[in-house]
Image (cartoon, rainbow, N blue to C red; front, side, top):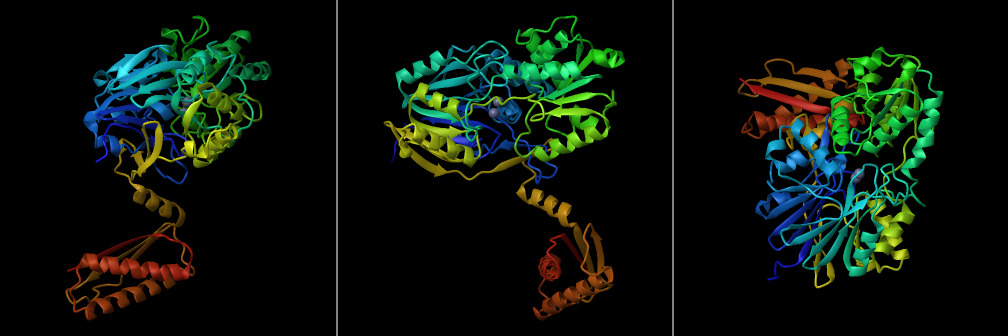
Length: 554
Ligand SMILES: [Zn+2]
Ligand SMILES: [Zn+2]
C-alpha cells in the first residue's frame, strides 16, 4: 500500500473551461480548497441560471476540509460559495475587499451568520492543516487579488489566481514582484498559473488605458451616460467617477448588487467617491440628461440584469431614451457573445448610442498575456508547471510557452478537471481521473437538472414535440384512434399524413405485442412505441422532436 502522505492537487473546476474555478490541495488528512466559482451557461444550456463545480470528491472527504481560500472577488471564483458552505463548515480566508464582496453575497442568500470569515492581508501568512499559505498582492481587474504561496510537506506550490502585470493600476498597487521572485529563490515545486489569455501575444495594456476612452465618451455624449459592468468591478466604478468629476456629471448606482458593493468598497477604502458626486437614482432621473451618469449591471446581456431589462423594455424605474449613450465596459465572457450582441442591437433599436470594445477601448483584460505569463515563469522558476484557468487550447498554449522557455515537457501537466496530480519526493505523477461534470443550478434547485433535461430542452427548442396517447382494452385492442398532438414540429407533408403514419406504427407495435403472448404492460408498450415512432420519424426527416407517449389499458 502506498502511504497517504503525498501531495494531491485536485482540479475541480476551471481546467478545460473558462469559469467555475475550484482547486483542492490534499495531504494526508488535510484538504485546502482554493476558490469556489461558478460558470455562466452556454447558449445551448437552456433555462440554466449558472453552473457550479462538481465537488463530489470533497463531499466524500468532508471531515478533511480544513479551510477555503478565495483569491479575489469575481463570480468565477466566489459564485458557488453558498453551495460549498451548505456542505463544509470550514473557515474562509480572504483579503478585505474579497471578504466584503463575499459578505454582500452571503447575506443576500441568508448564509452570512454561519460563515466563518477570516480577513487576511496581502503579505500575511495563515496555517490551514499542514499547509502554510502566504498571500502576495497581484493586479487584476478587481482590487485586492492575491497569489498564494502554499508551503506543503512536499514543497512550495505557487497558485497565481487571476493576475496581470499592470505598472499603473487604478488603485496604484502593483503586483508584488519581490514576493514572487522571493518564492522563486526559495525553490518552487510547482506553479499553478492562470492561462486565460495564453493565446494573446504581447502584454495586456494597463487599466489606465481606459481613462482616455472614457474621457472621449464623456466629452461627446449629449445626453445621459449609462455604464454597464460587473457589480464587482470596483476599479471601473472609480474610473467612471473620475470621468464624471472631470465632466461635471453626477453619478448614481442602479441595482442592489451595484449599490451594495459600492457602499461596502467605499467603507473599506477601496473606492474613493466624493460625497457630492453620488446622488440617489430617483434624483438622477430628474436631472438634466447631460448632468448624469448611471452605473448599472448587465454587461453580459444577462436577461435579469438592469441592462438586459432596459434592452427589452422591462425595467421598472426608467427606460432607455433617445440620446442615451450606453457603454458596455467588459468583454463578453466566451459563450456569451450571442446574448451580448443581441442586447446591443436591442439597445440601438431603442434609440441609444452603444459603445463597446473594440469600437472604443472601454475595456481592457484583467489577465496576463503571453509575455507576462513568461515573466511569471521566470520570476517563480518552478520545477513543474500546471496551467490552470482556461480551455484546453489555453492550457496547451501555456504549456508550449513554458517549453520555449526551456522547461522539460514531462514537467508540464496539461490536464482538465478531475485529473489528480500527485507530488511525492519531488516527482510529479498524473493520478486517476475522477468522474464528474456539470452541476446545473436552475432557479434555486441545485443538481436536479442533469444533462438529460438540458438535452430535452434542446430538442424541444429546435424540433418541438410529438405526443401520442393510446387507449387500449385488456386484449390490446384500441378503444379509439390514437390522440396525436404536436407543437413546433412540422411533418414533411401535413397532419393528416402524420396521423396515418402514426396509426401504422401503433398497429404494428400492438400486433407484435400480441404475438409476444400479451405479457407486456403499459410501460413496455410505451417504450416499444417510442422506439418505433422515433424510427419512423427519423426516416421522414432530420428533425428530432421530443416524443411523448402515453398508453392506458382499461
Ligand atoms: Zn478574476
Ligand atoms: Zn477568473
